[in-house]
Image 1 (cartoon, helix red, strand yellow):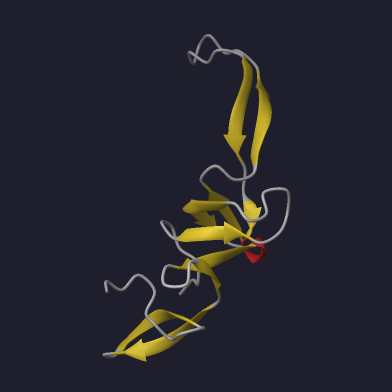
Image 2: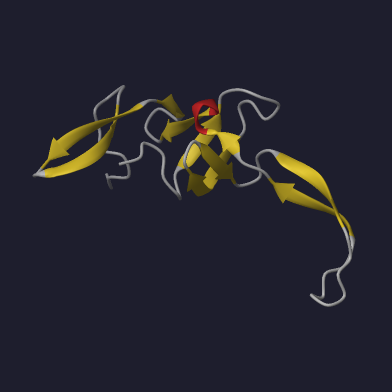
Amino acid sequence: MQKIRKGDEVIVLAGRDKTRRGTVLNVDGDRVVVEGINVVKKHVRPNPMAGVQGGIVDKTMPIHISNIALINPETDKADRVGFSVVDGRKVRVYRSNGKVVGAKA
């Protein structure tokens, strides 16, 4: 079970995008793609057979999972995540207050 999953609201802890927030689009091992974070310019060669126009495009690149943290909606701050068993199910909980991640109020 992963501590950070697709769709989670996260904050960047280190790097040039420090303190920026975004939604996780993809998790691949220890790398995470966050919407609008770590955007780079990529030079693309035109390919008429595939219908790709050449030029400079913006591309969202992965960031290491250790450089982001989940946002606790109650405190609106970064929070660590742990695991607990609730009703026979293993769930993620915020370390600061013990509330279940993603639980409706």
